[in-house]
Length: 344
Image (cartoon, rainbow, N blue to C red; front, side):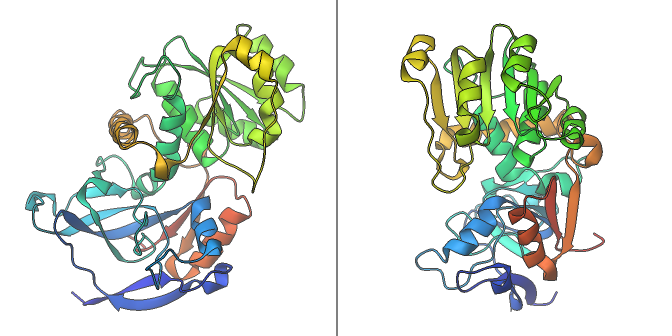
């Protein structure tokens, strides 16, 4: 085996042009770590946002990519050697670390390399991570729980997913359906409506074609229990209009320094709650529940990718990772993937 590998790095803040293809030494796993030969890397908005913000303290060269999928090829001390050859999906590979998944091999703590079922493709594995863990957190912050999704865990609940054609929205629809919820979603076009239906949404509302509040209230007269919100500043009025008593509005994205203004008295009367969601800072226990639930959903075949699953794939080779970042920044509809090991 060559002792070097190809990797994408950036050494300063900037646009996609700062991403450079380099040769780097092959990393060795330390205590409690595994080395993964990356087949596919997933790209998320936080990848380009982190790149434009610059390097974290103490890091001189950053390999982007929180999510990915591949095969464990080496393990450090304290790790079962039986894991060598195991297909895995990765989460937060670049979390507070210099080495993400946009490289041929990456080393992560063993718990961040999770078994990927044989029936699940590397594409699916690379599309999990940040979107699926975020979606799970949003679906489990209601006062009445559950802490961990499972079949039937959301039975009797109505979930509204704002932006059902996005990566987090797609994961939220699929996980909520798996957990037994009635799932509504809002979209901005007939094409996105088709994707949301393919993901499994029971009802889809095109907010540009009809009054969303009226349509949602007709579909859910008692209101919705959980709102998975992608654009709080745009949808706050709508969310309050359709929320059931004791509902939670779980917001996982922000447009810059966006602010939300909402009716305080009405929120008090209905005991509504706004819940911020950021996967990187969520409680350790909540993250463990999310990883376990996503693995269970995978095993049940409840998570899918591709246009037939409402999540079109956009592929780029490793050397074009800058173009992949630009596609995400320009709001590509679907999931952007980087083929790190082509043809594998």
